[in-house]
Image 1 (cartoon, protein in one colour):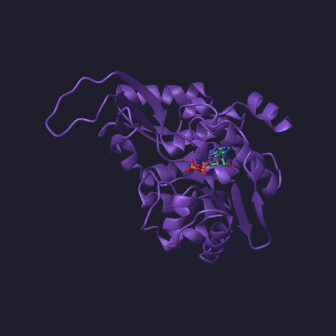
Image 2 (image 1 turned 180 degrees about the horizontal axis):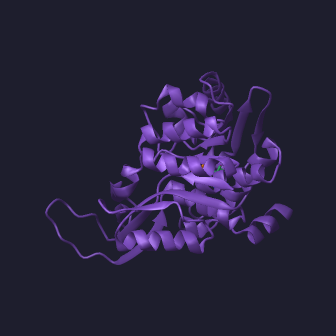
Length: 303
Ligand code: ADP
């Protein structure tokens, strides 16, 4: 199976004509909840593509935690290794959005911020049966390093999405990573120069390879994807679609990429699958709800 070790989060979204000022109470319009967290999104992306997927992470002992775990389970993710932490809330993002589309966001890491060595130990039990470990940066960085180290010991492939963008990314993590998958913003943060388009992506990928990753894949949004290893460098163009919402496109990409590698396809084909899953995710709004199922995915690839 594939193991995703990372964040599980719920977004509480309120729409309002304008954002409140300090001390102000105002009437909003609509409220909705969206299950997210980059870890959970990537697990759902894989499970919806029919890949056996285990989620390892934490939720709080609250109603959101129950809801988040239930949602993961109904998407087909194995949830036995999600720990319910009695001491904190689940990870939540409290989001206000105005008519201009501007937002104010408060992120409470909650249980995600408590993912620690105990969870790495549970992960280690699962690693011998796994084919890959997916990581992101919404849990403590020391825990990410410990998880990557455990995977390396078990000779399990590590795929790291260095998101959200980090300015203090630890150098020791690079050599523990087989595939790193930044978008343009994240790549720029890591390498320290702007990344916009294929040419700079190639330069950034070169830097990341020198730092010790085996493969660097730079996601260029609507401009496609650049991929480099010591042996090969290639660009995969975007699948032309009518994009309505790019939320979770990057998570869909990582799901598609890993699903292809799980099925034994080449790196090039895996990047094509990633790009296809990313493109499909932009055609629907929402996070986990926008991720394609296997039927839709196969039909899209055949077109
Ligand atoms: P992130 O969501 O991490 O910022 P990107 O925006 O780069 O990542 O999107 C990930 C991948 O999804 C892209 O590399 C591309 O393959 C696909 N994608 C993103 N936006 C579009 C789009 N407008 N049309 C088609 N495919 C897209």
